[in-house]
Length: 456
Image (cartoon, rainbow, N blue to C red; front, side):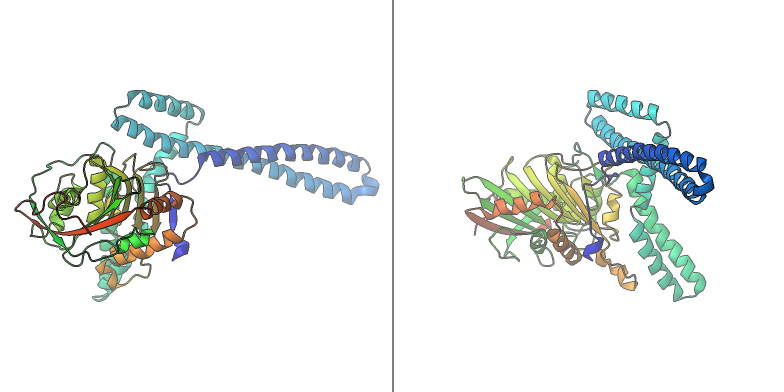
């Protein structure tokens, strides 16, 4: 449904604290107007009371009016105070996120500056620190809400096949499991990749690449996020698709599409399996990552070249780590159902998530602050609201579901889509586009050399 799509800048705070302060100032201005009106009505009340013999009804009405104005005056003050306190709470959450980033970046000056700002706010609003901590906690806990609800309902349906007690036990078990995974991922921060995150064990996973006929034969730039999602490899032999764009000035740019997990196996021939899932989530290189890096090189990409990356599920993890490794000028990162959220400060990041997707829940609630370059955003919705036994097939994680959500994002009037459309428009201006896709297998070493197989 389009009406439940939410597009935010990411992070724990989805409100503009400056707008809260401006609104509080408006209520204070209203307070002054009401106060002046109360004084005038009070003077009129005294005049009418002096003439109560002939104006008793008017005097009574004036008294009632002044009482209502006095109540409105108190209400305006209360609302203004509440708005200012809310702005402080949200600002403290933002400051905590900035402080965390500064510490990770070893920027002591920035951390000290943030500490001073934070201490000054807490000195004026001593209760705000506890409220900010509570807000962060509930933001983390509530992140998997839709997944918990649907899991509970599925558990009830499964347990009900036994008896009423089984329905209760099943609901509690599956719902509790979903909540536990979501909260553990959020509190533990396992799916949050900071700017300095780097994979360990690079080069230890030998792979063999084999060029295959591209599944999507289009040799023009995609025009939308949904069109990019439809070019994602997977389902056949292809695992990585690379499009090489020759720009009007002779420079090159690359579009990279990386498939999600293709097999439930652990350590088989296909690198896109659960072993790679675990390795990447734990911060270690995988055969699928090495295959993707080799595919980019084989398509002609050299260190420093511009890359626009699109990935689904495991492919989104791979693309996220590529952005953080810094070998390429990763201009754009679009992830569909990613179990991680990468904060690559120079990369325009678009994260499309489903709130009922258990894989996306592994990212927890994401970073406390916005991740990626200015203009980055997160688009979320519940993809498969009616609960049923078919939820066991995880329909909310399927690429088809994410393609549908991408189409809703494309149709959005949100101004943050402007830079994304600019990326597609820039690629559409290319003089030529070369496309290559690769299958991959564990072991043996790369079966192709850089740029030898890239072509029409």
